[in-house]
Length: 440
Image 1: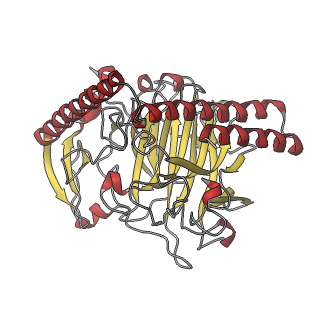
Image 2: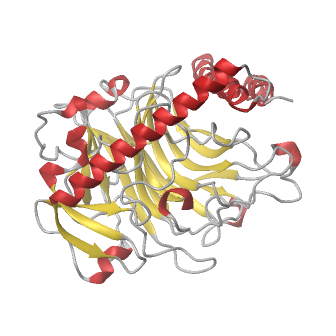
Image 3: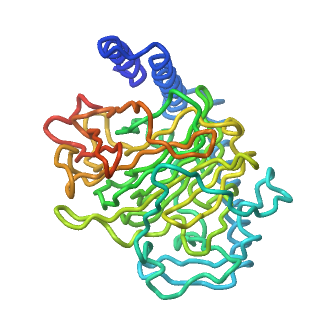
């Protein structure tokens, strides 16, 4: 059965389930609209993959494919060369991290963001007022990232930028589209699976949560992450994202990293991770985007967490990022026009990508690699789920919708208490006796 047909059947099952649960009409429409957008996107991917892989394709299509691929590599080489030259030119200090990473301290006004055509002449902004209200605290462990253990730091008025050892700027691209996040086109059977909590019944001006950090097993050419999504749009999606991930194809090791991401066209041609393309404006000299996280939770042991918050400045319309107590920087609103006013969806949770064959589910883990019913100190969690309202107040997430795409592989379990507020455990081991071919 084709992937898009399975997705359509899934939507049908969700519709029946929604009726039984008495979900109101407004929420049903929002959920189904999002699911249908996924189906449409999957159909586009299938068509692209068919053209790329069909041996019977005509000569003209093959010539076009070769030309487009060569054009892509020319663009990639040109962009990498320009960014590398600029970073090397403007680096005032270089730091070697214990894990082998090389960090360049670059003058803040010479960072990659200002190479974006929409940011020509852009002047650095001062941080706005942080959201008020429920649980304003920010948690960040000492020596949060491995590079800081060296005892060195970037000077004032500079920012740390991760230099990829392999090629100076970027590791092997994850798809034939430059800077694109999805790997669908490179791996035709690739599939993204989720365990998420979602708010989608209002207008949102940010989101905040506390994550515990793990080191899940991840197969080659795949990733596993936990993050916040701040989203607007249906057919075309604008999304701002922050969290931790394990992604060897991007970082060349299997250690958990802090990351940010953005897209203005449903992950097609705009946006990138961290500072790998012009876009996100960093103002902080202490936190390294793409940097290895030092303290990792252990099974039945100590749990290590950090707080992530994204919120909109009502004066400039820009979206700001804070990790723990550190304000990192911002996404200019011009990058994501559909988010200029507000977000329509805020999500929290885990995601993996499965690039394996159709008959075998990946054993890439999500979260801790354990199912949520194992609970505290064993399963991964996201707690203190909050959203920001139009008055710049933090509120507990209202009426969240919880979903795990394949609960036998990766599940989610919600909860509430007076200390954590609304929270959930999530994750799983991937391939197991109940998560096999039928889940693919």
